[in-house]
Structure formats: C-alpha cells, structure tokens
Image (cartoon, rainbow over the protein chains, first blue to last red):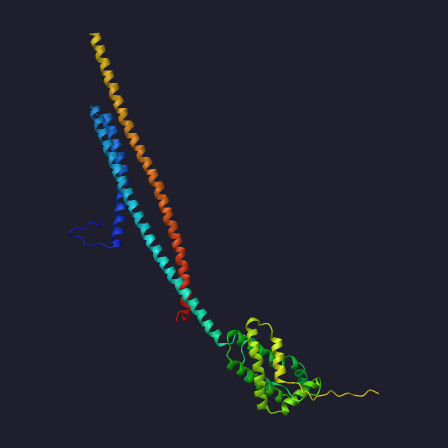
Length: 293
Length: 84
C-alpha cells in the first residue's frame, strides 16, 4: 500500500487506510468466489471419472487439482486474515491517539477549572480583606480617640449616668481595654523601653483625668470616697498632677516589669497600683457621723 | 496355465489394494489439512471478535469522555466572564 512507484504520488493517511480497506474487500471477494469454482471443478471431475475410460489418469489429475485448490484457498484465506489484522491494528492505533487527545483536552479543562477556582478564591479574599473581620474587642484601640468617642456617646440622663457610674470602680470605663492593650503590648515587645512605659502611663493618666473631668455629676450610688477623690483630682492642678502620677507609676512599673515577663496572669494588682497611684486617698476626709437619739 | 492366471490375479489384487491404500492416505491428508484450515478459521474468528469487542469498549469510553468534555466546554462558554 505504501509502495511509492515512479509515477504514483505520495498518499496521505486517509488514502492509505482507504487503500487497505479496498484491498481487504477485494481479497474477501476473491475468497468468496473460490466456493463456486471449487464446486464446479468437483462436478467436472466426477462426470469425467464416470464417463471416461482412463479412470486412473482422471484420478491423478483430480488429486493434483485438489492439492492446488487447497493451497489456493489457504493462500486467499491468509491474505484476508492478514489484511483484517492490519486494519484492526490501524484502528486500535487511531483509537489510542484519539484517547491521548481526549486526555489532553480533559487536562486542559481541568487546569482551566482550577484556575477559575483559584481566581474566585483570590477575589473572595480580596473582598473579605476590605471588610473588617475581627471584633472590636480584639483590636488594639487608639486609646484617646475611642475614649473621646465613648465620652461623646454617653447619655445625659440620671439613670444612665447612674448605671455607668456604678461599675467605674471596677473598670473605670476604659480600664479593661487598657489592660488588654497593655498586656498585648507587653507580650509583643519582650523588652519594652522606658519611653514606651512613660508614654503609656502619661496617656493613661491624661485620659483618666479627661474622663473623670468630663463625666457628669452623679447623685445616687457613687460612694463618697470616689466623689471626694474626683473633687480632689479636680481641685489640684492637672499638669503637675500628671507629672507626679507619671513618675509614681513609672517607678512602680520599673519594679513590676521584671515580674511581667514571667507572669502575665496578674492584671488586677497592676490596676490597683495604677489606681492608687493616680488617685491617692484624701487623708483629710472624715466620714460624717449622724448622731442617733 | 490356471496357476499363472491365478498369480496374475493375485498381483493385480495386490496392486489394486496398494493403490487403494495410497488413495486413502491421500484423502486422509487432504481431510486433515482441511480440518486444520477449519480450526485456523475458528481461532481467527475468536481473536477477531475479542479485538473488535475491545475496540468497541474503548470507543464507548471515548464517547462518554467526549460527552463530558462537551458539557464542560458548554458550561465554560456560558460563563466566559470567569476566564476574563
């Protein structure tokens, strides 16, 4: 099929396959034509053996013809089987190539799908980064701005002020975030500098004075000691008070710094020290004694 | 004379028997070869059937894969904004 004659041009793959199929069909047709030929030859030999006088000669000729016919039939059958196996092998090779192409296409589509998925995830992450994910409780607040915001948001009713004034001794409005931020800052920085401590303390003291001064006056529930403290804090100079408090708190924190690195789970004593440093008790205060008759 | 005639008859019979045996041998050879050819044809039919069945199965699998690919490509073409 692929023999190139001097006059025959080169054949393509389809032409070669077509030629192979044509030769197979031709060989099969020739094999089918052998049957009537053998039948006719057998009838002729039978009549000749019966009607002739030289039966031995007819018999010898018949033997030779039978052998040749058998060889011819085997030859034709071999040709047909060879061509059929060649065609089946070609078809199997074609199917394998098609299978490879389909696998390539499937891999390409899979890569496109993975690319689309990754792009979708990236876009989703980008969109999620723009929106805040964490609660405000876990975000380090800017102390001054947030306290000012809290102060501006406070209502002017007595009840609300009463309710907010009650928990002051414990939390002092912004003490817990302050301690949380203070803890986080202390954890993040293994060796906090003195300047950072002083800045924190100065800010803390100034903020507290601001909060204390800006709070509305309360009538119920506030203990007399706290009100007296507030009045004492108001009466004294804020600038001088700030410096003294900062120095006292700094001295306290210097000694406390060493224990912070080992033990973090001791926030209440610090707050008490800070509170005691920032708000010293008025020694001249004496509780009123109501005479009982 | 009679004995010479009998001997020729015996010889003829012997020759005839020998020829008959040769013919029978020839016929047996031919029949044997025809049977071998028949066995070859049966074996060839079995192998060809198995090969064709394997090819058919491969073609079915490829057809299903192509259908899946067509569906995936159609879904991709319906949403071209994903790939832009």
